[in-house]
Image 1: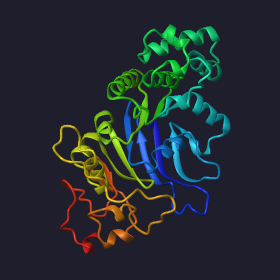
Image 2 (image 1 turned 90 degrees about the vertical axis):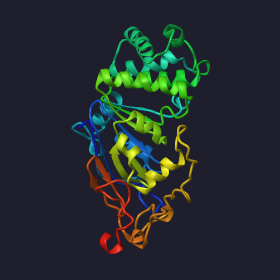
Image 3 (image 1 turned 180 degrees about the horizontal axis):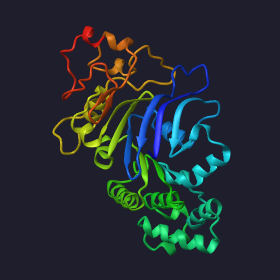
Image 4 (image 1 turned 120 degrees about the horizontal axis):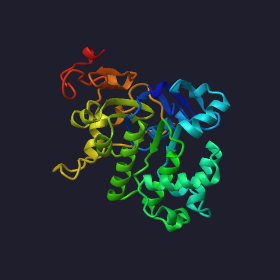
Length: 331
């Protein structure tokens, strides 16, 4: 297994924090596989990705396990952690302008990583940077190499950041909303480039997005997160065609798609803050299917043929929820 996260719990310091930001999260990524992580803002998607690089807030209490290959990230020595961050795992963020220095040329950004992380001679680093720019679909790389960030479009800059992330030929790529700020055409082009590179390199990808349709189309498997927990894990096609958790169904209903005759139906209420504590299922206050047992039931994951679902009322044997189950049967 390339990435193996098991029972990962992260609690931030502060009296106002009453629940973990991550609560027993578990997921895996195999070589050459794209695994999606979806959910509303604040569900814990980005924190999960940052935990893979041990980039958590100072004072955070961490429990559980996060392994990249044979490396236990949470207990890795400084030298081992540096090697992991600089060579084996790369991260691409949503806004490339927040990563690039506005007063330095794009070429400097690309060659610096090659020189500092890999010890590549400057002339060789320049040639490699030009090859990477062409590889991610940037035309006229010699010209782009000399440009400043403000001289390039958002799509071009995202390709530059992707080229930098791929410079060390990482085993694992963490893509945190890497295409959400792009228009549909540019998004498709960047995703196509990423797919080709993943297939040729055998690289695993953890693909974080709020767009469930995109996750269903692009990923092999998808994990749905709510309030720091994974509430449903399925093969992408099955998740979209037959969602088992009420929250997953709610996300799909929010954005039924251009080819659907259905009107968008927002999920009632708002996602919980870290100051909100729960005695039972965190989604119960917003769930139309909730019963009294949901208020006290501690979520656990029930196995499905292609994954799992953390809902006490989910039918794990056939399509959809089974409203005929009584609270006594659930208990």
